[in-house]
Amino acid sequence: MIDYILLILLALEYLYFGLLGLIDPASTSALVAFTLNETISFSEFRALYSFFTFIGILSVIAIFEKSLRLNTYFVIALLNGSFVFGRVVSILHDGMPDQLLWTIFVVDFTVFILAAWRYNALR
Image (tube, rainbow, N blue to C red; front, side):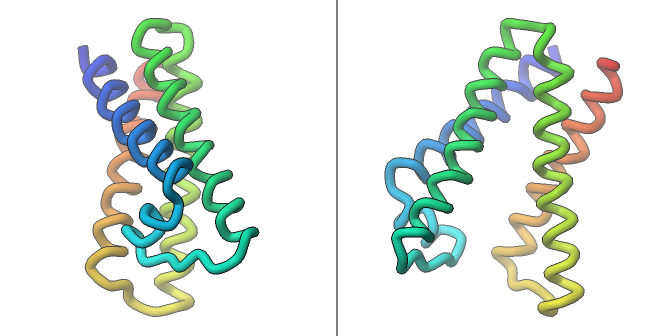
């Protein structure tokens, strides 16, 4: 039951933000205080958010296909773990973040912990 709930929440999160970033990168980037001012920046943003979209699709499929759950949690843990690592490097290098970045950090860390927990539980 916990996997159904968690995968539904992950699917909603990643599909929502992934599709939002693909369809309207300028507005989505403004949500996280980015400014897109070159064609390459739009391309990079859309590339990253397409990955989020595919993770959302993978999460939806994993709700129904139990054999995909282990790999789904692994990919999500890897993604969020790398985000957490990069944010810690940023804090050490760039200084203390503002409230928005702390919120994003907490979300990334929480998703990492939940995905790693489920990955280890299913292994």
